[in-house]
Length: 178
Image 1: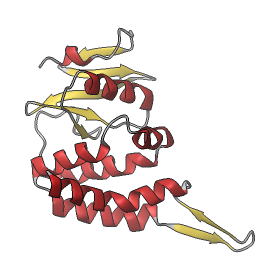
Image 2 (image 1 turned 90 degrees about the vertical axis):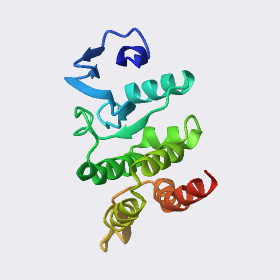
Image 3 (image 1 turned 120 degrees about the vertical axis):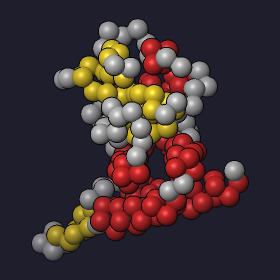
């Protein structure tokens, strides 16, 4: 597969350099690369709309892909030391409102892609560790404003916090059914 085949539209902001697909927004942001014969798409909160259009194009063209983070998108191989960062980035991206609403709308299967990645690299135990760490430090983290008598959360939207609670169970179910 050639990386030029996955450019979703003829917008002049898409550019291919060194076999990496970039999107121009305040600078060149790497969004896709072919690593180890797999298409990896970078979940980057700096450009959610181009990311979504790239995913929708891949879904419409039946192109298989996996997620990665900013630091591994420019590498030639996915190494074990990068797996924790990729899993963490993939889990934490759901706190972005647009991305979460897009997941809930059912336009693509977030759990299936995450499960495919976990199966490919056999990192279910690492996923459990990262999941629990993010759950306690980020998605359940709160503080109390005693003066206003109000509780604040790091992730403000309650539906996002509730969805995060179900991710582990959905992945286990997906692994069991596949």
